[in-house]
Length: 280
Length: 347
Image (cartoon, rainbow over all chains, first blue to last red; front, side, top):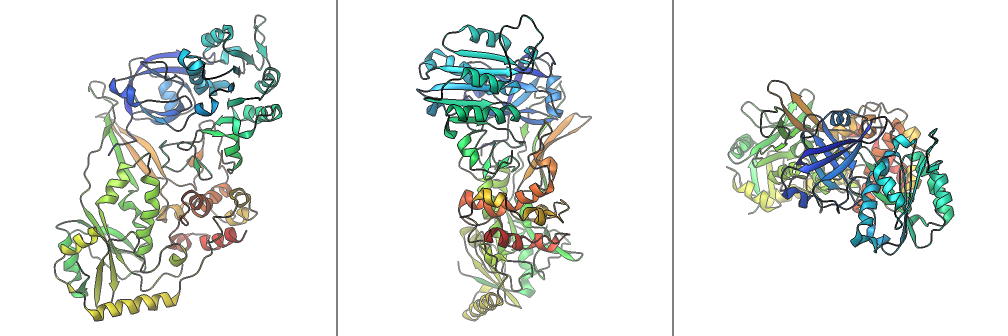
C-alpha cells in the first residue's frame, strides 16, 4: 500500500531572502531521486507539506510553476518551530516534501476568460506560480487579458521583486504593484491598499474570473469591490488556510463545515464558501 | 460452516486455543471497569460487563504509534530521510466487542479508506482483525444504539456474533473471516434448534426492553448555517470544561496529531501519530495566532456539528455516532449528546 505520509527526500538547492525584515525566504528544492520529480506533478494553487526530520511538517503553497523544470520552490514565513528551523538550514541540507496536496485554481473555468489576480503580502506564492504558468507561451493564448494587483506593506516587503519589475514592463500582462505606504521618493509604482488599487485598476467583471489571495483583512475589503464590479460569487476564487497536519483529509482539524481545507480546498469559490459555516 | 455452541466451562480454553492463529484481545476487569487487553499468560478474560470503558478503537488507531523512523546523524548516508516502520500486523481477533463498537469501525473506515488516499496504518490493522461480537443482553442506561444505526444484536462490522445463552455461547459466523475463525476453534458443537430458539427469544426480549429513542431524522434536511448559528450552543457548552474525555472514549472520534520525537546519542527520531481532540484550542491554532475555534463554545459546537450534521451531509448515511453512550456516562459535567441531537433535530 502506498504511504501518503511518506515525503520525497529533497536537497535544498538555493535559499533567497525575499524581504527586508528577513522573515521570508524562498527555498528551491531538488529531488534526491530524480524519478520523484515526475511523481510530484502539480498544478498552480496546490500546496505541499515541507517535512523536516526531528521537527515536523508545515503546509506551504507551491510557489514554482509546473512549467519550471528541475526544481520546486516554496516561500516560507518564519513563524513557528518548523519554519524557524527551516530558516536556519543551509543549501545542500536534506529534508522532505510531501505532496502535491489539495485542489488548484480552476484553470478550465478560466480558459478563454480575463483573469484578475489580487494578492497581498506573503500570500502571493501560489499566485506567482499561476502568473508564471499563464505567461508560458503555450498557455498564454488560453487566457484573455491578465490583470495583477499585488501589494505589500512597504517596498521592502514585496516578494519576487525582480520578477515583478519584469512583469511590469510586459505588454501581455497588466501589472499593478502597490505598497500601503513608503517614504521612498523614487518609488514609481502605486501607493495605497490593495482593495483601493483594485477598485481603481480593475474596471470590468465581464467575462472575468478573479483570484484573491492575501491576509483576511485584505480579502474582507476586496470582496465588496469585486462584487460591486459585478463579479458573481462563482467567479471570485479564494485560497484558504487552516491548521493542518496530515494534508490528506484524515486528521480532522482543518474542516470548514463538511469540507476539509487540505483536501477539498485550499481553493474555494466565494459561492462555495457562502454555503459553509465561517470556521476559518 | 454453521453456527457453534460453546459451553462456558470450555470457553477459556477456546480463547486460549485461538492464540495459535491470532493475537487475541479480550475484555479484562480492571478496577471498576473493563477494557480490552491482549490475551497473555495470566490474563483473566471477563465477559461479565456491559461495555468496556475505553472503546476498542485503539485496535486500528493506537493512542500513539510510530509512523516513520530516521537518523539525524550527518555521518550516515540516509540522515534526515524518513523510513517506513515495516512492522507487520499479525492476524488478530477481538472477542467480546459490542455491536455498537464494531459498527463504529465501519463509520471510521470512511475517513481512512478514501478513493484518493488510503491510510496504510489504519487499514492494515483493520484488515488483520477479525471482529467477534457479543450481543447485548443488558444494554447500558446511557446507550441509544437503536437510534444510531446499530442495535444490541446488530451484525454490521462483525465477523462472528456471539449470543450469551447463560451457560453457553452461540457463535454465528457472519463473514468468511468469521467462518475461518470458527474453524480454528477447539471444542464446541454444532448449534442445535433449541439454542437458536433461545437466541431468538433473547433478541426479542432485549428489543422489548427498548433503548432510549433519539430523533435524528431531520438533521439531513436542516440548513447547516442555521444549525451553526442556533441559539442553544452557548447553553450546551456552558458547563463544558474542555477535558476531552468525550473524544478520548468515543469509538467514532478519529482525529489525530503528528509529532516528531527525537533522542540524543544516537541522534535518532520517530515521527509519531497521537490521538488529538477538537476540544483543545491547539487543535486549530494557526501559526499566525489566529484560531478559528478559539472559544470552548465553538469547539463544543464543532464536535456535535461534526457528528450530527457535517458527517450526515457528507456521506448521507446516518450520524457519526453509534450510540454507545460512553460520552454520556463519563462526561464530568453531564453533557448529553442525546439531548443535543434532539435540540438540533427540532430546530
